[in-house]
Image 1 (spheres, rainbow, N blue to C red):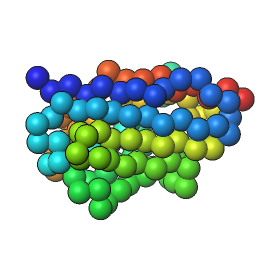
Image 2 (image 1 turned 90 degrees about the horizontal axis):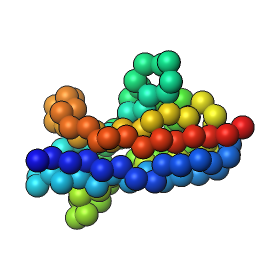
Image 3 (image 1 turned 135 degrees about the horizontal axis):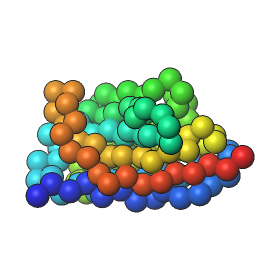
Length: 117
């Protein structure tokens, strides 16, 4: 059974930083592209960042470029999202995802990130 377990969410003041981690039970983790979605109350789910299986290619939604960094450690089956200069509009539940060919088949349970102004 595939499990993605996020951690690292919490409450932070605007301008602060958080680092999200996602530990995956995927036996072939290194074959999967990984990513992070987020969903704020009353808003649609949004793709925040993705990273290719090798780590050589990344994508960021415009609103987080220059502030967030996605990375992965294939030896630890873990993907990270470093979030700096956080803004109140970053408040959301953040979900770790895994997939191939642009389709994300596996989702974590989500971790809450709250940024106070």
